[in-house]
Every structure is written in C-alpha cells, then in structure tokens.
Image 1 (cartoon, rainbow, N blue to C red):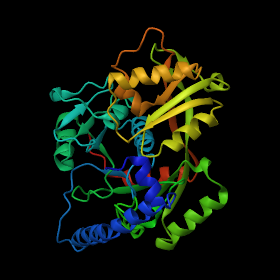
Image 2 (image 1 turned 45 degrees about the vertical axis):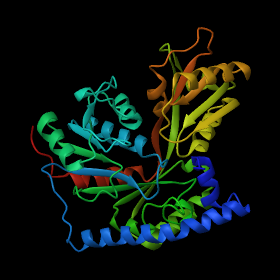
Image 3 (image 1 turned 120 degrees about the vertical axis):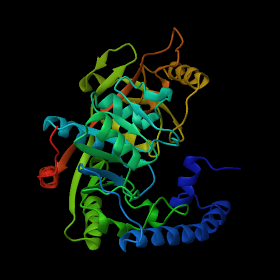
Length: 371
C-alpha cells in the first residue's frame, strides 16, 4: 500500500518506531545510497566542467533548497520580485512547475498563455507579483530565453533552481526551514535531502525561514552547522509574517481581527504544521484541521466535506493557505457555508536582511542590460 506524506515523514523522521516502520526505513537505505551516488556524479561533472552551464545575457538570481518541499521558497521569491520592482527593474520568474510538461506564462489573474493552466505555486507567484511574468517551463534555458525575448526581462528569478545547474546563475540563495533544517540527515528516499548538506559550498547565502517557530538555541545550532561547511556564508533569519486573511467575497480581515476567531484550517503542504502554527500565532482558535498531501488537487467533494466539517466544529472561518486557495477558488461552495479565506503572509527578515540586500546590490552592479 503506498504511503501518504504524513506516513512517509513519520517513518523517515523516526517518529514511527513500530516493526513495519523500521523495516521500511531499512529498505529505503540502499535506494538512498544509489541516489547519493547519482547526485554526486552529476555535481562532479558540473564542478569539473564536463557538463556545461548555459549563461544568458541578464543576471540570474536563484532561490532553492537542500530538502524536498516546504522550506518557504515562494515568499522569498515574492520578496525578491518586489525588491526588483522597487529598483525599477523588469524581472521575470522562472519556475519548473510541479509536474509541468508544457510551457506556459502565468499572469496575476492566474490565467495562462497557451491554454494550459498554471499549477499551484506558479499561480500563487503570479497572484502575489502583479506585472511580473511567471514563466512555467521544465526547460529553464528555454524559459529564460522567452523571458528575455518576449517580456524584456532585465533580471531572472529562478524558483527552486539550486539543483538545476544547466542555467548559470549570478547568485544562489538557499532557504532552510528552521523547523526541519536538514531533512533528517539522509538523502531521498530515506530522508528529505535532495543532496548532501555539503552542497551549501555552492551557495552565496542562506535564509533560515520560520525562525520564530524554534528556540534561539536551535537557531544557533543550525547556524553553527552551516558555518562548519562554509564559515563565510551569509546567513539571514526570516519569518513568515501574517498580514491578514482574504475571504472569498473579497473582504480582507486584518491580523488583529483574527485574534480569538474560531477557524477550521486545512492545507496541502509538505510542512502543514508550520501553517497551523502560524495561524495559531495570529491568535486564531483552531477548532479543527485537515491535511492533504503536498500539491493536492482538490475536487468539489473535498470542498463540500471541508465546509461541512467547519460547520460541525462551529468554526467562524474556513482557513487555508494562498497556495491551496489557487486550487479551490474556482470550486463552488454551499449556500450555507462558513466564509472561506486564505492566510496571507510575507517574508520579513529578523536578522541579516541588510547584508543580503547588500549582496544582491553587489551582484547586480554592472550587470543590468538597458531597456
């Protein structure tokens, strides 16, 4: 029987210690060794220039991670896109798109070119960055060419590109989730690591996300481990700060009005606990919750069940994330359903933000082509 996301995490993290879990964890070990070998060979080929990177005519700023899913890359990409706009620069976002097989361009209304729907994260990026084209293409080099040729991009922001080394980049920023920093110390499928932690030697900066959800001691321990790999690596801390909730009828609920509000929360994320923790930090009273696998495709029946659950728990609000919102917005709700909303968050730096901005300035200096 296939494992769902929660069962998989429980096994690789060691939370499940029953005999079946131990057998499955042991069985994943050889596959992890094979994965490590494949990743090591591929990186070595790039390091020794036996595989070549393709450089484009504009600077590329890359946001990526070491682990699979859930590290908070999207808010950082949004922050970078807004920073570029503040500087008067024309940016475009490059993303592979979850399970995307065809190219498309997402716009702020989440409609896309070429009649192909954008997946959840590209749609979320497009909604959060009006005026910034989001190029969805598994071929990042082709996506870069489109962004420059068709959209006049002066800066490219590559989402989830740390392991995608074909497209050269000027700056690599790695996000590390402070609540689960190193993927339980093992590579896929025995852990969550996409590559060994030593891969940080290729990065220029690390942004610790969800820094408010762990202790100061934990943060220092993470930073110490990072600096053992590269003592000079810039390390910044950030939080996902709630800026309010937005309802399906267009009403915006400011953060102070969320305090004491009884909500039923649901999400399909790689790290659902972080969302529920953020909701509770706003002062929301969690009447009940429901989790789905990351990138879950909601059906009409799912939303009907959620609305019924919210009513049965006496919730005043059915609350989700913006990523999940992009997938339920077109579904119809029962007439007697409680209001549905998504919790809007933005990245805020608590330490190292100024140093990161200075590094970005230094990276862009003299590299921006004229319009």
